[in-house]
Length: 248
Image (tube, rainbow, N blue to C red):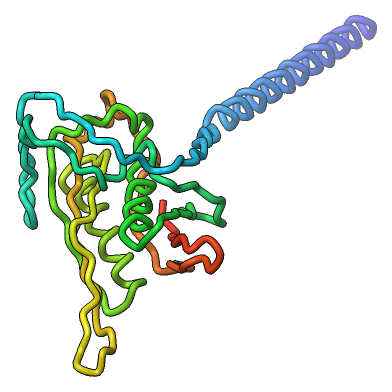
């Protein structure tokens, strides 16, 4: 009888041991599942956008191909269909040939644009800003036009305002520009010949923006910033250089 009781106790210990082993296995399985879930929930790194360097602007005249009109409403200026018999002017800067580059910045993107004068350097800056927001700038058709204008108490404020007006056309009016022609740039003076303000007017050539179609979606520019903005003339080459930080 004594031997039988010991056997039962021994069997009970085996059962407890088996139960403990099974509990440990379940715990380990749950921990593995939790780790896998955490790995699954971690965000994947975003793909880095390639930097593009522009080339020298082109002066060739481009013919316009006839398309169906698509008019876009605006609180400022109406976007209009370009006349098929009208030619884009020779002073138009195109998005694929404007002279600009993208430089690294701590959190945003720094645009460096060049031009022979104020009009061309600001035109190249606008084209750089538009090109950064689309994947295929070469697909923009010059079928529509719109006019932008801006003023400022100095050259820096004029640069900010004219670029902000161009950004509004893309973000607010869904109009993507593939070319820009500066029509009017003036310095306003008082009697003592002191510059008091700057004004600029430009015509944008492009079409309605199709981010899911032929244009593609690039990196959105949220705003223009005054931080580190410079527009200066090189004493050696006499070319103008603009440095503008875009908030992305």
